Each structure stands twice: as C-alpha cells, then as structure tokens.
Length: 320
Image (tube, rainbow, N blue to C red; front, side, top):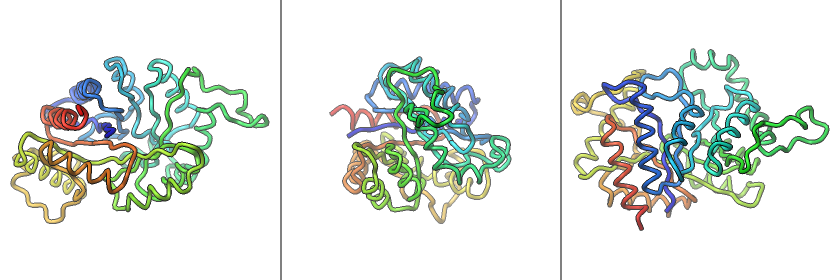
C-alpha cells in the first residue's frame, strides 16, 4: 500500500510559528526514513492554528533535510496567482531536488475574506477562470504553447531535467473533471468532503484524456498506542472542528475538550485507533475506492503524539 502525508503545519499549543515549521521538518525526516511515498504541505493564510502560508518556501527547507521522499504542495491555490510564476517556482524546486517535486493545484481561498482580498482581489472571478489558468500553467510546465501563441518562446526557467508531477486536488465533480480533461493526477479530499469518492473516481477515470490516470484518497487518521488514547484525541478533533464551525480560530486544549460534548460530529470520516485498527480501516477504504495511493493527514494538540501516530502507521503498513 502506497502511503503519503498531508501536513497542515499545525501550530501546537504553547509553541511558536517557528516551532511549528520545524516540527514539519522533523515529521518529513521521519516520513523519509519510514518509506512514505510523498509529503505535501498545505497553503493557508492568517489562521491562528496552522503555520504555513507559503508551501513553496517550506518545501526548500524540507528538501534540504530529506533524501528520497517526494515533496510538494497540497495545494498551491491557483486563483491567487499567475500561472507563469507558479511554474517558475516549481521548476526551480525540481531543479534543486530532481525527481522529487509535486505541484498540487487547488481552488479554495485558504483563509478569510480579508486575506483573500489582500492576495488577489478578484477571487471569484479567478475561480471562474480556473480551467483557463490550469491549462496555461500546464503549457508552461510542459513547454506546450502553439507556435502562434505570444508565450511560445517564453520558458518557465529554469527548465529541470525531470519536470514536477502535476496534480489537481479537489472535493467534488468539477475538480475530478478538470483533472481528467488535463491529464493530471487527481487527489480527492475524502476527509473534508461529503461527496461520493467512488463516483468521483469513476468520473475522473472515464473522462481521463491520456494514458495514466492516477488517484489519491486523502484521509484524516489518528493512531495511538492504545485505543483509549486514540479516542480521546479523536474527541479533541471533533471539538476543534466544532470550534471552527462557530468561528473560533485557536486550538482547544485537551483538558478543555474533555469537558465539551459534541452533539454532531463533523468528522465522522475520521479514523482513530491503534495501528491494527487503522490498518484495517485503511485497507477497507482501499477496497471500497480503489485509489492508487492513500494520503494521511493528522491534526493533534502536540508534536510528540503526531509524530508517534505517523510512526505507528508507517511501521505497521510500510514495513511489509
């Protein structure tokens, strides 16, 4: 089973943003050693509980501290940016770390209305232009403009010996179709979508233009040494998500979470348990949706238990 990591660079209680970014580095090193396939960083803006607004910068840091694992953005929020600049950035990363760079593209705002306005000013208009922007980006990445196009002689330099893998990330039918139309790999955010992943994968594969459709299922997972501790941590996640729905931006403590009852769990898709429990549930998802790869995201209140969660999963599923 191919396993990868989606890191939201959580800002742990009592720690600084610098601590959170260094914690991402430590997790990337562990993932590299355990044999995870790829390690992606999310993009968020002006949120108190996550630390990375610029995955392209953090990726350079992670690449310098790892040896084998693929690293990438999950995702660069393309409505905020010009395709040419994105292509230049990721070609530079691919030049520095040959054969290891993934460029994942998304369309979400990634932050508040104020942050969105500060970044692009015309977010909704740019979202409507998403198909056009994806096509332009891919032409820069693949050096594929027609001879009569104004960008025909323009290179997104440096041009690496091995180009980044291009992905589209999404949670619904439009993203599946856009990935298929452009011959891109498709990552479905199962943990944050109420859509039927099986139907979306079918849409993607049936409409794919190219030779090698590739799918990834992103899942929220908590693994601990005991089932009881995993359930405590899962309850903390449910409380956190309830807080966020009500507009809170900071992480609750474990002690605060224990005192709060969550009536409607917004994260019913969360997998939590021991390594054996998690393995059974991931294998069930693999059988149900038949993705080419599973990607795990884990939000916990402290660095130690987050590292331990990925370590337990890696040792159980990647040592076979």
